[in-house]
Image 1 (cartoon, rainbow, N blue to C red):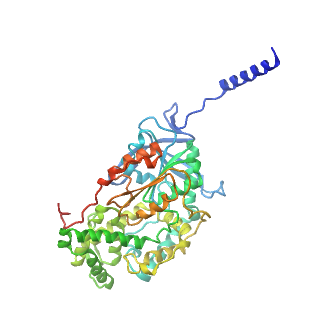
Image 2: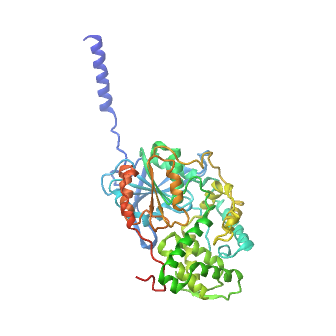
Image 3: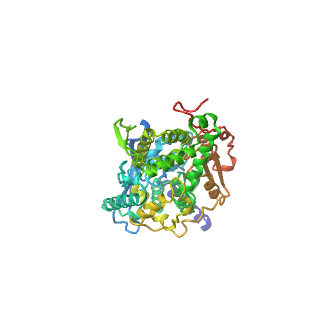
Length: 505
């Protein structure tokens, strides 16, 4: 055999032998072993149930991945990241969908059941992966019980500030026994998400962030652009936003929209009066004090309770109810009743709202994020003094962050997300905390980005109307500009209440 032919034959034989001897590569995605246990990459899953509010439950597969609390001390304290896999209903693509919860401080595993229906079409050919951010849910949760009777929720001025300081000291001292509070920030969550992606063996992921989760999604895409296939940003938080800085003014703008809708509705205006005038009247009375204790039923346990109405009760309801238009539609009625000296409904609604808020947010994680990433940029605006929240909200945050350990923030943290990554941003027209202008700001820097505004809607709109269909189309195509959003124009806000029977037909 001639030398050149012999060399060619030997090379071909070697290639054939290597190919025959090589261990077949498993395609990315879950697979069951001989005992029926599900493995996805290096992670071993077991059957579980994700339980949400309202008796909602989703069948899933759950697992735990150990990561270092401090990335510079890999042998130090470990955190078990709680992970859930909601498998695709059909043959799955290699790029799963990561849903990132809001807050900061909400658990992805606990909030997903309310959004499960919105993922129905996406799940036809993609798995959904949920990772509780460290400090939330099952990932070393940093909970500080928030008593609904805590004076910092309803008092004003120095009394409220003193109560906030006491709560923060107590929370910090308790949690420092189980966590280094400097390492529970957005950057740490991004690092954990990347660790999960690597452990799964997924070449790319699609990120769906809700509210604060949109900050996490943008930071992940900036840090790992090669692994971010597409982003859906629901209720957008731009990287430039200082969390808490705009709350007072944004809320005031949203309230004025809802109050104007009552003034323009004949029945609401005739039966309940001008909500803004009612608000001014009730606020003056509550801030003046001297109101006798009011007896009312707890809307959760049905027990009779007695409280002195304060402006903090009203401010809390006014802050949270505009998140959803159906809840905002009740505000004219609540203000009318309080204006008539009937505070029972206000106290009951306030108690229920504060209880739900305390149970859904890991306050320690929330403080670690805000104090590490935003506190240094707080700049109270004296012009906010006449708003519902006033400057007290930001002042209280400054008080708390003065006592809380702070982590580090990346040099480019405030830089806008840029590049070719496909992004679909969605906002509610009446969102009181992340108004549509935030979505406009983010997509301005993204040639493959598009922003959809849902008419008459509030905060967190992924499951509204035809949005789940558009969401699925985008995840499938990764082309936001190809989406036909005409169906969104059929959305309408809930009319304002005109009495205890609701709104008039």
